Length: 367
Ligand SMILES: Cc1ncc(COP(=O)(O)O)c(C=O)c1O
Image 1 (cartoon, rainbow, N blue to C red):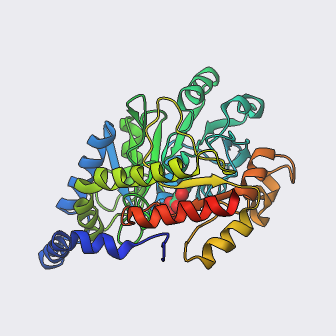
Image 2: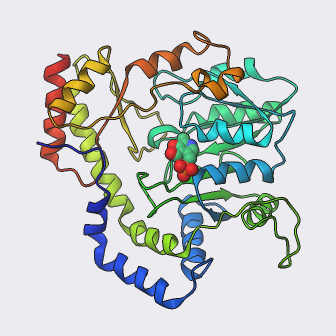
């Protein structure tokens, strides 16, 4: 039996009638940039996260970069973040001219360990950028308490946390702004790249709106900032609007598959993921840790079961970012997790049989 890691085509098969309809509507309508779907999609995302402003952009990476420009992060500033993540968060900090400062992760949540943040704060620290990894929020209450105590901004990298909340307070409400990614394989994926900034701050929202169109100000062809070309296409807004009504159902399917993994692998030699108290999870990823990870992955491949390693090498080991880290051994939890983590198929178009087969195959291999 094949167990694929993704099945994007199956999303189209499920929603074909509606997707074909809106694609035709947009193309034949002629409003390709910032049309009615773009506006409606922003409003729907803002309502979903209970925030005042949602600003659609061209990627999650752009969302983070634009937020940092909008709040004035730049040369001479330090931003505290983690090295166990996709490169975009650290990459965008470096692009602003600021310095990323890596703090280790919590071994249970894989997100920044709040207990280690204060030791990394210096007079140059301007912000904390927690990465809400794998479909649930970081320890946002503890991070917010630290940020408030030290007068720091929080920029939420919520690329993997669309629809995630802690005690009912959604991503985007814990800091000055949050950035979501709609990369194809995200729970809400675009037909290509896409992203969204959410914020409750009127001035930050105005800056972000200007920055996404070349820094254009109140009047066309008058510029307030050095900006970007980062509009979400109307086609993509329309495409994702067809997915919004089924997103909860798709996330429920992920939860059902997560439960199959948990029930099957409980008590085996596998470290299972945990959902932190007060958090929901959208199961963007289902991550296990095992000692013999590479052997398990090879075995799964032979059995037709896909798996991925998020993330195989921490950012402080990569050449462009090594200078911001303290070398091998400086982030022990991050480094151990990268050796042991394995992400299993959990997309909404699997069948229970496929997930049971994957879980049983893992169990019989690891014991
Ligand atoms: C944690 C994290 N941050 C940022 C990004 C960047 O988003 P995008 O790929 O939409 O630019 C991603 C995307 O994969 C991500 O997973």
